[in-house]
Image (tube, rainbow, N blue to C red; front, side, top):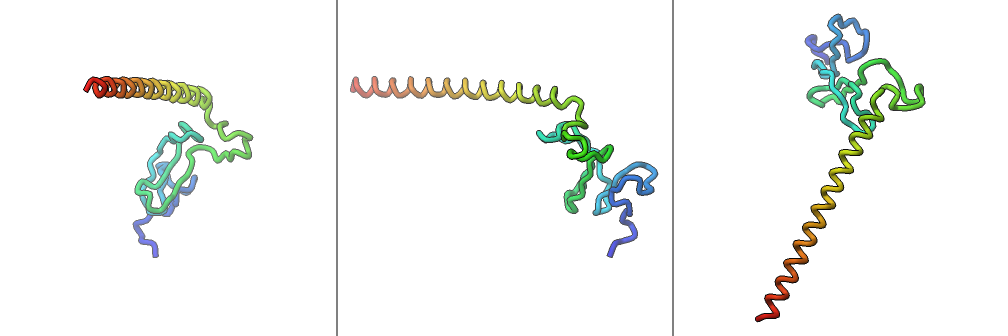
Length: 121
C-alpha cells in the first residue's frame, strides 16, 4: 500500500523526473555520493540516505565490468589514486614498525634496570 506522497521514480534513469533527482524506494531523495572503497575509489553513486530500503545505483552510464573488461575502466585516475593510497599506507606501516621497535627497546631497558636494581638488594 504505497502512499500518494511517495515518488514513483524508484531511482530509475529517465523516469520522467525533470530535475534529475534520484529517489530511493523509501521515497527519499538519494544524494549523489562518492565511493571511498578500494574496488571503486572515486566512483559516484546514489544510495538511500536512511539506508532503510537498501536502494543503490551507480551514477553515470550503465557499464558492467564484464562489458569493459576491467572494473576500473570508468576511473581514469584509478592507478594514480591507488598508488598514492598504497604509498600512504606503506608510510603508516613503517611508522608503526618504528614505534614497535622503540617500545621494544624501552621495555628491554626497563627489564635490565629492574634486574640491576634487584641484584643490588
